[in-house]
Amino acid sequence: MDWRPRCAPDVMHKRAEMLMVIRQFFQQRAVLEVETPLLCHATGTDPQLDFFSTQFNYPPDNPRLFLQTSPEFAMKRLLAAGSGCIYQICKAFRNSESGRFHNPEFTILEWYRLGFTLQDLMQEVAELFEQLVLPQRPLQILPPISYQDIFQQATGLDPLNFDLPRWQAFARRENLHEAIEICEQDHALWLDFIFSHVVQPQMKAGCLYRVYHYPAIQSALARIHPENPQLAERFEVFIDGIELGNGFRELTNADEQEQRFEREVAWRRQHRLPEVEKDRRFLAALQTGLPECSGIAIGLDRLLMILLNKTSIDEVLIFPVARA
Image (cartoon, rainbow, N blue to C red):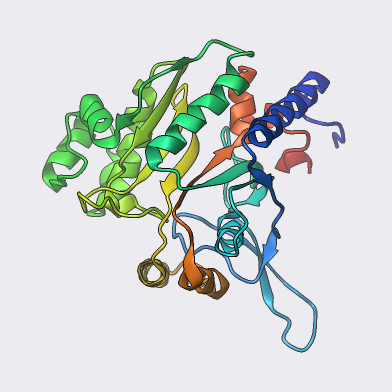
């Protein structure tokens, strides 16, 4: 049995340098570093995410607790309580995820900026990546591009116009026959599948992409665009075609958020996924009032992998799951 760390000592030093740069970046902008619990009474309802849970052996109720897939809900409770702009570097946990780009325990950077538009946050992301990436390797920061534009350029399909026979024909032409069986008639699944299998591989190496205005059916926790209900105020960040971050102009309407939770809970039930409860504390914070803000989460292990030109996330982890 190999007890040694998976990554080399120089990788550990590079990780420490990366964290130092991040903290200096936010300190210069007066963004407060916070720490929220990783073990909570509720977790997200997103059907695409699987979670770890445990039983807390504390009488009388012995509650079920969850390792968080993201610190998002707890951080938004802080925002509603008047924390001001905040960031956090912490561990997050997602079950059933292990591979070249995935480890079930990973390091995340998440931050929220009060009063920021989506464009403001995309600009700040570019400024952070300039400081993190350029000292290590060349990086071309491309202008932000809309989801609709990059999708159409790569596929010829309009992501907002779901014509199932046409999309099935496209999958056959691209030798992606499994998409027909996996996605069936689900527009959102088709978008995810084609984006990851066709659009991302066409992204230029050495370039930072910021893809914004995702279709509303992929809105997650983002608000719907006020002038076009087909779009969500959401963007994602990519380098070398690898997804690194997911950002939103945050939804502040508690009733709409609860309706989204209800739909996700129903979808989970219909597809026989593990049951979850809505996070009542988070919804109560939204009812009290979440300030206008935008936020993003960045996967730091993937970023370090890109900085050091590694081919697998395991190469930048001290003890990946196989050696934990």
